[in-house]
Amino acid sequence: MPGKPPASSSTRSVERALALLAAVCTGGTDTLVELSRQVGLPVSTTLRLLRTLEQDQFIARAEGGGYRPGPRMMQLGARALSHEHLVPLSRPVLDELVAATGESAYLSMTGPGESALYLAMAQGTHSVRHAGWVGRTFPLAGSAAGTVLLGRTPARGWTSNASGIEPDVTSIAAPVTGPGGVVAALSVVGPTYRLDEAAIGRFGPLLTRLADDLGQQLGGGDPVAPTPDPPHDAPRAEMNT
Image: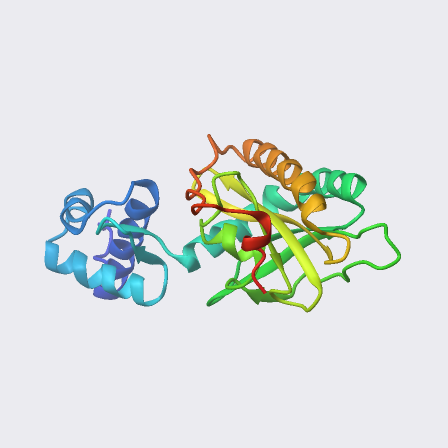
């Protein structure tokens, strides 16, 4: 029988890039030399492929000098989870948030560029409530959901933001942690006059608990360690406008 035809150079490049991407996603924050050893490629070839993957945002540099999954990889993973598990699993959680707070509840994930994307929502019960934004994107910067999606959740497990995206609108968010880290943000959004400091203090721990429960259903382990609170942290100081 004829043997398997030799792979073209372009096919080999794709295979090598996929093997390297898999190594980055399944490992920790491995260095160039460690990744080169794992995939069995010369350091120069590994570096060239890493640069291409980094340029297209499939991977990113970690603070310690290694590599980690990048925004586009996280986006693809979150979308896969949303189709298979995340959105259906979030429905009871979103309904529980609305029942407890009366405010609109959202599930969002990292979107293209420096944005986030609303995946699902449950509409609030108040006559004045936040309108449905499912399918719309919003900036990661200046939003409570964006803060947790960027891995910058304070030590208490949730964050809040007033007038960050829309005037006179406050949001509170907590991270949903899956097997690969933060895959989504759970949030409640409503008018600032109702989501005052007292309401934020009540709803923040509830959001954290429900987000952790949802992450456990996705197969996540312990929640990702949040960043420490800054000195003299207070809810009002965190509600950037």
